[in-house]
Length: 416
Image (cartoon, rainbow, N blue to C red; front, top):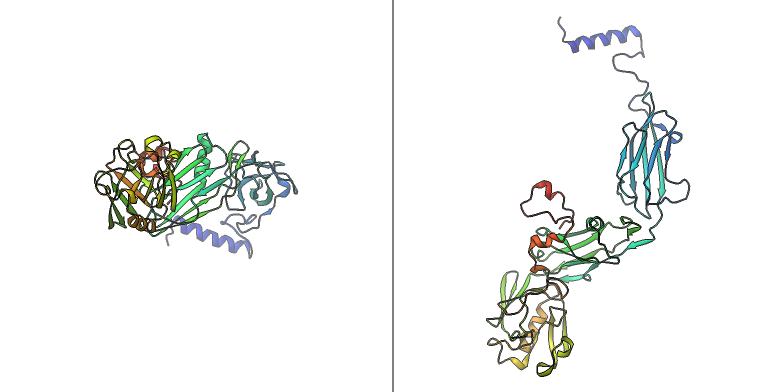
């Protein structure tokens, strides 16, 4: 009978086992340290840089784990905090030292599990739990707007308690602030307006009839020297219909659409020469049933000065631009532009618009002789910025363009 090399080996093993007697083994390796063996306690063989007892570790110092006594080596280290975040680290080639390569979180509890083996290959294990000191200086973050229902144009804002200037620190902050929408929006990115404010928007308006959530995992995370993140209150918004009001300043009409369908067309008057209404996309900021409008508060005086009671006022800029009732100019509405920059209409039409729109809805002015709406600082002009330019204001997405490779896209952290 012919045997393959494997068959001969198996047969030889069987014969050897029989000749050695019951309980003897051969050809299967030594059972001195079987894989199922329970690891021994390596407490006396492993040292930590973390303090013992109730003392708290300095989060500004790395964690070190060392093998002592020369009897064996470290094979693995897993360090995780109470929130489930793993601490990155590096094990020396000789297995005698492991050290963290990322900052520890402040005010956190860590569990460190160390696996070892001695010179003869026997496994060992040790577990350590320790706390880090709380941060003395914390970065507070407040999401905006207030919870509620908004239109599809509402940006998410993040206001910071401390200025963040360096690219490295901004990277940490931006990675820690998450925005998601249901249904999923088309892309999305944070944009640093300045050192203390970020705005988040998708490439296009938010999906209608959905929701947006903003969350943070910044708590305890080291941002810069001595500055750590604080807990951040999450935000959830409901999104209503896609409501857009398109104001054609040259045609003197405003057409209102809901979810793509026209629902009203209203004769209006916009800013006259010298006071032309700003072009571009604006976002409804709020509504006031009555406002006393005084020209002197926005620098308009002399023969152009005014002080009027105004009803059904829907605000679109902080500098005083509204969509409102203007019964004194009904004869010009649909015909000529005679206002000081606001969009004026009859009292009935203004009341209808007031009741129809909600903060976050879109008012877009076209064909005006005025300047374009500011991107920031006078309301929400965020949507007037081209998408590639918007992403240039993000540390994470500054180099990303539509059509980039999957490897480039994998760098993106914010999700919608």
